[in-house]
Length: 115
Image 1 (cartoon, rainbow, N blue to C red):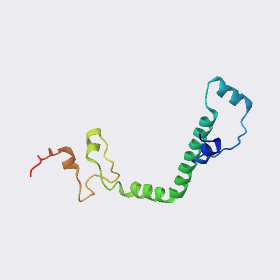
Image 2: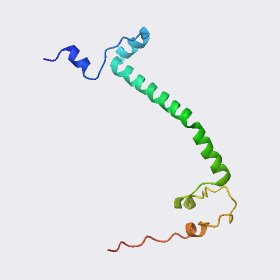
Image 3: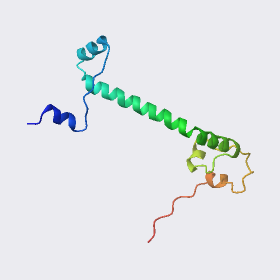
Image 4: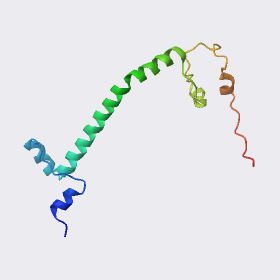
């Protein structure tokens, strides 16, 4: 029969937490598992901190990308944007020698598959 030490040795660690008494009483009244709730809260805090760190680490690249889009527009405008009245362009119409507006207005049907 596995001992308690075996259970904690399988990727889990026993820790002591100090939690306000009213929080624990409410959790017990709601029949919540305090360990599972604490783990979920810690996992959520980790994810939030990692997201915050990713944004901080990538802020210069994001700002550079946004500045380029603000001045030059997006590189490619998806076909579906025309259906919803979204152009995605910040340049005046006609300034792009590879303007695809006509193609977007009259989409060609897909060609049948041939071997």
